[in-house]
Image (tube, rainbow, N blue to C red):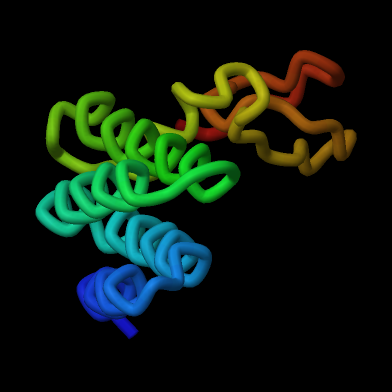
Length: 125
């Protein structure tokens, strides 16, 4: 299924009175849209989340608000050019660090490192 399929099924579930299924499908559609770098689908997911939020209560309402914020952050954080890696790195900050293993001492170091800080191994440029 594509992001658009999930969003369509989400609208149908909401129309049929099943907001729980609707929000699950909307999240699935938003995640697929992010992976596919489809900003139009993310806009549609954000609009759908607002609709679900206004039509729901309790946990579903909170989940819909989170989905709307998530889609908005994905779109504005990437300057409307959807990029999963850069958004996740900014969102998680220092938790997301790309590393490589030194072939000499097996310690983890930054991907961009030219010299291992533990053993001094030099990488070819």
